[in-house]
Length: 414
Image (cartoon, rainbow, N blue to C red; front, side, top):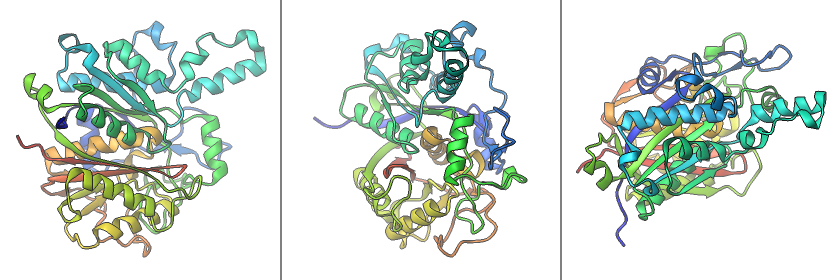
């Protein structure tokens, strides 16, 4: 059976740099940071007091008030981003065969806020006061479940939990579902709502997050010499993927074509990447091979680029291993503006790829002031967006546990 071509027809963003595709894209191109002091809880006693929080989000714009009370914020974000993506795609599922519309969502943790609040209730008030909605609010598959219920998508439905690679894997797996003919349309991406006391405490204990608290907007500085850790973010990003045939039949606008997907493991360490980026190299090569591309044909990489010492060194080494001969290749990290959306990061960055290909503009890596000799790839698009025609682009995501995922998009040509 011939595999189907798969295209991107809708984007929905709920992020620290904006809600909705247009403001998200405009702020990224302007190099605007969405990182500020934590407001979700009192972070006074924490080493890190900054995060990329979603601002001005009104859940009842997307979910009725009664139902919203029975959902964790990670589901709120997912439903909002899904609605925005469906609207952007002009998709009416009631006019489709709903059994051919599926959902694959990535998340790193799931309902962290619910877990923490209900444990507090248990501790202070006893087991009889724990909410009967606790379990369906907390479990990580509920974003995918609620999307299916709210929008009537009855096709393949699953959840990917691969730490910071979760939503890149989700989009990759959704691509494979359509390619092999098991669905025509997939609602896919990631969601996370982990700017919570316990999650913050855990990352602070690891010394993984930036403590540049006096300058929140300058704290995330991927590949830069003076970086001191990642900045946690929250939000959701959803992409509508569909077969070329489906998209053309309903007259959908097409952002880009999904061309290749790579997925590997380091088999090395629970949190640290392999120093030479060996697993990342294999992930990128797999995605390129599946796309039928040589390294010299790639125009842009949206890097994982977390602003940690180990990740940025490893990823830079991996990129150099494959692309040292590609002097035209540009690499940037939009985490410099959004922070790290954990399980939702990869999907947000794949939305960036689609917009880069459509608009021939590349968002910068902001806060890039002093180059790091250990991250010496030739062009990280420092501080100012760049205009460039992009025919082929890749996004990378690497997660705790040694999970690596890469996806390649290309300009769509009939």
